Amino acid sequence: MIVACSIDRRFAELAGVMLYSLEKNGGIPDAQVFILGDGLRASDKEMLQACAKRKLCFIDVEGDILSKISGLKTTSYWSRATYARLYLPELLADRHDRLLYLDADTLIKKSLAPLADLSFEGRAVAAVPYDDPTRFNPSLGREANTPYFNAGVLLVDIDAWNAQDYTARIARLLQARSFDFLDQDVLNLTTEGNFVHLPGHWNAQKGWEDYSQASIVHFTHAKPNTKECEHPEKATFLEYRKQTPWRSARLITNRDRRIRTLLLSIRKKWQWLSAFAR
Ligand SMILES: [Mn+2]
Image 1: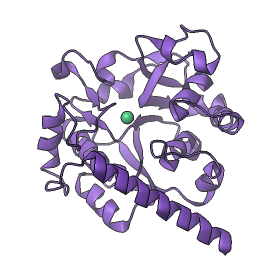
Image 2: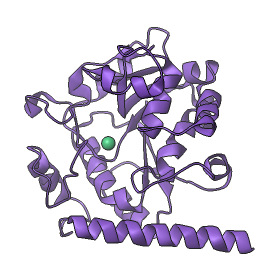
Image 3: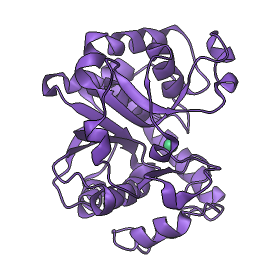
Image 4: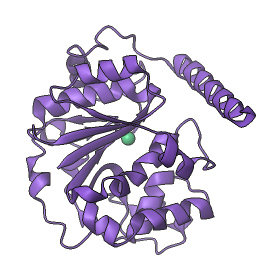
């Protein structure tokens, strides 16, 4: 099994703690771990590597991948890193393996080994469906009860994905229109409700009743490195964080985040302008 996470600098801290939790509790020491990074500095990569026991494989979002996604709409929430991950199964086509995509805002609490054995039943992806898909489907112009999954924990059968040309279908959708839940909407449209339904403990989101039963906790709302987060698993996050280079990082406030996002967008515009001038 291959594990992958796609981030820009703002998510390095969360990704670092996620990686630490993966090493501590994930139980898949032989899995190769890819970090798709948009604008990560050498120092970010060193800090991320310090969270892991195994050697991480960094892929920079540039060149070929970047040319595929440049021109697509990005916002402070939907970064280029979000798009880049959609190209991973194509990039790893020769691996004939399964790919576990994890959001940076997840925490691994129990062994992931069962996911390495799970049967895809001929489908290309496995994910945790929302109890109520009706809030997502209408804007996608499809039947309200079509199963719809959260894309923060996504298991992909690389061969089946490529056999069904998902990457090309995704690229066409992204060019054709905009979406409320970008990559998640696009992934759901592409699979057309035809995915393996994983039990909720593989992606325990806000409102999950008992986090001691969760295999993967997903901080879908306030992030655990922020002041305002009141998530029951924030304490676990902070405990794990003590074992990473972010051990003494300050908890982020709303104001910090606005400033960071602004600086990042200025930097990106600057890069774009200077590329254009060349
Ligand atoms: Mn997430």
